[in-house]
Image (cartoon, rainbow, N blue to C red; front, side, top):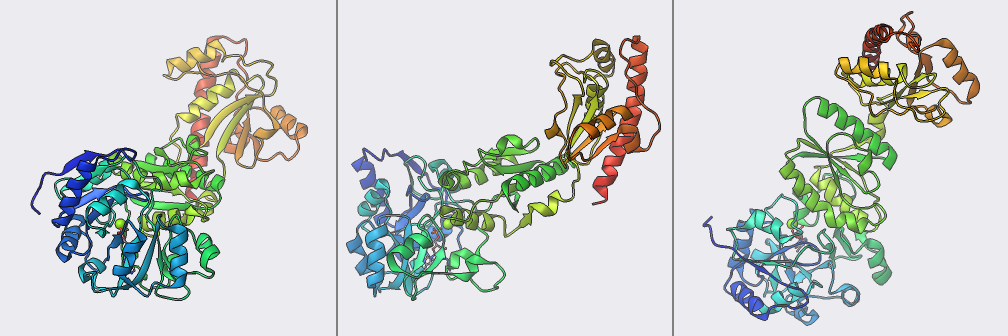
Length: 510
Ligand code: AMP
Ligand code: MG
């Protein structure tokens, strides 16, 4: 395709520059292409009544020409010239939701070329709410076809910079109106059938529509990908919205999903892959491996919709090989989010439980008397072992009165082996440390029995020697000369090597 100079103009929604809009309108009237913001995503505008302009649109996007375009109008009165049989129900949804993120399908009039409708007898129409969009539609003659302004198959653009990334040099102009409000494409409702049918979920939900017109159906290909039927909106059949890396959705309750993603990210990172994680405000801090992106808050899924495509695009620049995403509630806009995410993932989902059940322990705690010598040494040495699974490794004491630092001789020995305990502060063992997922290892028998007799519901408490089936015991070096600390270190390193082997055996047995 011939490279052209793309003009980029900043537009302030509140003070729209008439001259720029006139210039943009002229480009459309002459059959050119202008990208512009709408409340959903950025659209690639062309004159909807011009067959040749439609061809240019498909070429610029690299979009299959059987995938019809949505015609955008600026006034409800413009509808009757392009749509036939606009029912009373349709009038009611228009009254309620236009201007807004709702596209309606009608039988088309002869005014609309087949180039715009991908050969269909029907036409998709929407009236956006965005002031810049409305001004451009009016300036361009009243009927502007506008698919999302991205290269076909890539995530839809939610900023002018995204548009430029994909279409610079391929279109005449980009109107930069900042970032969009909603972030996912409009809901599509087919008004040629009764009951009307949702062909693509968006910000206007089934529940909202049913309040106005009663029963609304949902294209069943949206509900499962197993029906084998083609979706009724031709565009919904393409792998769409997709980042370059393989995306996988991890389903299940949030706590379980975080554990599963942590587990996968640890293992993949260990194998040398760069991994991306789609997390939320509520979960982002839990991840210890991978490139973590916070997509928004679970308290307001609108924030997630708004960031979805931006985050998917950002991962393209991070050059990750895999992206793992938490799943979101399929209510309200959550439906639209999960629909887009599922398509971006090519329907690759896994159940969090199927991953998490493969890891028995997530935490290893070494328990000594005062948590200032053997315990912290053991924890730090284990952290330096090569482990197949991720463990939170720590130490606790049976009698800890204040958070004292590690013993100085222990620190001297650790330093001579390029390790340090300088961040250590002694901590007392608490009942909450004894959960299902924690392996508690004491150094001596009496410590083990003290824990078992002192707390209820004690699980997974062993002496280190017992757990690794080695009769040697590591005694406290307290008050002994430095060499004894050195001997303890050597023995600890040997026994912890065996512990690592045992944990790794368990990981492989999955
Ligand atoms: P986009 O332009 O990227 O928002 O995509 C437009 C969507 O609307 C695609 O999924 C199209 O298949 C769908 N669409 C447009 N016109 C029609 C129509 N006449 N019947 C059914 N779906 C349509
Ligand atoms: Mg699109």
